[in-house]
Image (cartoon, rainbow, N blue to C red; front, side, top):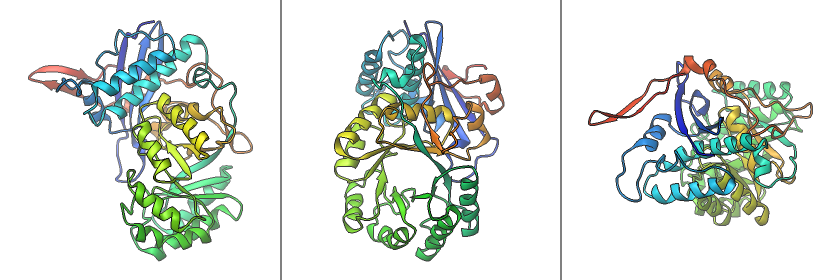
Length: 390
């Protein structure tokens, strides 16, 4: 079949807060062809990503992301790989390109799966899916008491694992962080898995991160995620060498397979966390999952937006029994809830990729009309992009 159209919609909550919550807006992508529609979601600033899709060519290695996509053939996974390689070549100097392409690539897989009446994970070569332990992904509260309540709510919702991140962590001193960690452990109880996400708050400062390690050990943290910037591999490795008892996680900032590979090889992370909406889509994430298997590193998805994104993130590691954790956005904004139906956990708190064709989730555009943002991009009076109607 031929790719007939690629459409983008910028959606946004009425009020967007200055907090680490990526579910407050969204960039949806629809790819059409052969009488079918495929859906994807970019994990990036929506307007910037739309501009990357349509911006005029600057030179040979800085072309619009959509160049050559419409009219291209899509009959098998190799066609997606071919398009991805071409995009990487023509957008070599276009730093936003991987984020924009990620949503398109995800939609291509969804479209191909629907055309073949097969789930995406099967197109990737997996023969069956294995359930993953869903961990509730939430923010630290404004106070330790709020963190305590967030933890109790996660347990009440049936989660046996939870991750707390961002918020005030790392901003008010070591003792304040210890109080939040103790509150999280108290709220979860002694048996549940507690994971901690620093949100890159320490940048390159190994000593500042090291000051929190005793408290992390005391609460038996299952990992310490992103204490440093995504490319600070030397700092990750240094922290790991000094505190081998606390697993280190990172990788969500990777927007290429090579960035993820470097986090594993040079950063020495114990868990590699990949966002299909950033790294270039499902294909690159699948490649990283196999690298992780070969290297004895745990692969985990990064997802803090909608369950459309969650479904996409499950596909690359659905068939690996050893990769048994899944980030589950537990309290997303209503926008994210309205993009697609939720993927439900079973009575044991486990979640699996859908057996339905494509990503296995549906998008109801009419339901999203109230979030739609009107965008127009023009150069010298020529309109390059205008928000498609719903």
